[in-house]
Picture (cartoon, rainbow, N blue to C red):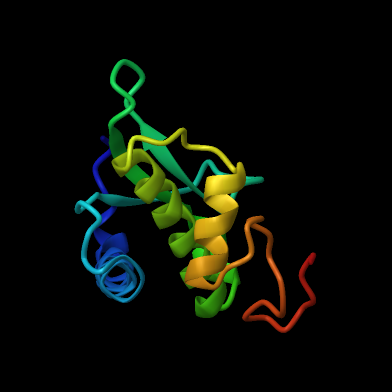
Length: 129
């Protein structure tokens, strides 16, 4: 696991509070705790759940630094919730994918099954739907 930049700590704390709130609201506090990391390398993805190769055990959730800096907090929330649905899959022993179980759970928690930017960025520019 990479060490967080000191300047990231405030944002990581906000993301952790959001993770706890979403876990309570949508998963009845049933998901395990998991570290969150900001990634500067993500160019096409908004977030991802990293699984250990050998065991399939969830290791961390990475959120695109670019996404956090450019997009609305409501969109970052949707991304984190998307990754928590993947965490739910892993915790339940299901395949971590975007198949029928994922789509059902995504609808249940109130998000689109696809992870795309929608709405406006913080700068006010239109985003891809």
